[in-house]
Image (tube, rainbow, N blue to C red):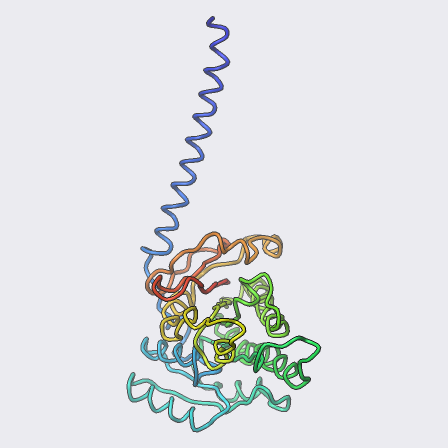
Length: 334
């Protein structure tokens, strides 16, 4: 009898031990997440520098982020293609927030624009620390690839790929010189969250480039003091989204479109967060893919996360529950 009971007791003890270990790991992970996203002190973006530069600054997400940066007493270099709107926003920010502004007139659809040179010349004397790469364009309406006109394809590549890349090249020398800087690339859930985006395939592919560029540069410059971050919102009520929201064949998707002003806090709160990259950068190319992040939604903390090592993690940034079930993914790099 005793001999028969001994193996059962050992098995029960083993299972109990394994269960205790599992529960302990779960509890540790849970409380670590509570600390990281809700309790840990925020980070002051002025550690990067007194100036930020924002593309697509006069509308939507770009304008909202300019206002948030100005509210935090960070001077802003505004970039857009319409000078009158740049002047209007510049005056508004200076009057309301008592900061300094400058602006650069740039049309990113023009191949002749020397983006890199203009950025370096305009910021040569500034303590520049933050780049918000927000400018982007999509289709005028949903379309099959074989019917899409050549100019739209060229403009999307010029703005979303070439413009984004040249803006980063424009600020890197200054960031490298001071050994500190932050680059926020605004991607899209069309590439980072959704498994596919039919009828907007070229746009989604261009934003996939932005995602991979961000991941790769994070590894490339991880020892140079430069933080790279991709933030990938889904539906946002901007000029670029107006054609999508007005398509009768799509149904009314306006209830799912988050206002840029309401998205602003979530985007800003993650800017500068030290997340992504693994100690060994190579496995990061195959691990923690965007679709996995959909299973671990977390709210961002108030303010900015402080520097916390180089372990890789992913952050999902849902909007308030009374606005939309669709959220913004932020893949942040340091």
